Amino acid sequence: MNKSKKALAKILVIIIAVLLFLLVWQIAAWSMDSQILLPGVHHVLARLFDLFSNEDFFDNIISTVSRAFQSFMIVIVFATILGTLSGRYRLLNWFFTPVLTVLKTTPVMSVILLAFIWFKTGTVPVFSAFLMGFPIMYMMMEGAVEHLEEEMNQMCHLYNFTPVQKIRYYIIPTLSKSFSLGAKQTLSMVWKVVVAAEVLTIPKFGVGSKMQFAQIQLETSEVLAWTLIAILLSAIGDLVFYAVEDSIIFIVKKIKEKKAE
Image (cartoon, rainbow, N blue to C red):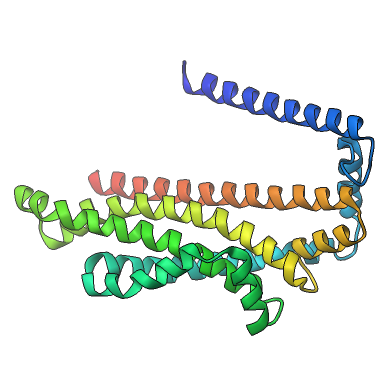
């Protein structure tokens, strides 16, 4: 099966899965016969389109996206640097071990509630998402560097690599795979924590804030509509990440081809 057929088959399977999910949802809504417990698909979609006409709709979207982006970038910078250094220097690794243990085992709700005491409502989602996303990226880079340390010297001596060649042909390509995987997992975590923190702290603008207001008023269809928006934002974020990643790979490939000519 060629790539085009595989892509088409994948799209068809996804469409069928979505349609089956919507069918089960609608049947469940009919059986419950309650707009508060579970509104039908058409009610949620109608409410979703109504939200687009709200004056503060884009303010809420922009606020949530901004918090997620800020937290993601902070995690990427600090976790990549500290994780790489910890993989290289054992003492630093030991120093961060208890910190990582605490961050990995602390419930997300506890982090959000404590941050709510310490910071303003708009800062809480950024701080909470940073603490929850940091261990993912840190451990990914730390493990990648530790793996390099075990095999790098033997390979480089075997092929008589210079320090520059070692970095260019072995270290960067190897670490880039772990960096990409860690960044993808971190991005997914950041979206979830940011929205959860907005639900609990209710900043002026935010997708999570609107979910909470709708829940208080027992507007289940609106809660589900904002949930769909949060899912779409996460999916769009993933697509943007993949697009940037593919663009970088394409540019690097073109540079190598020009140098080879």
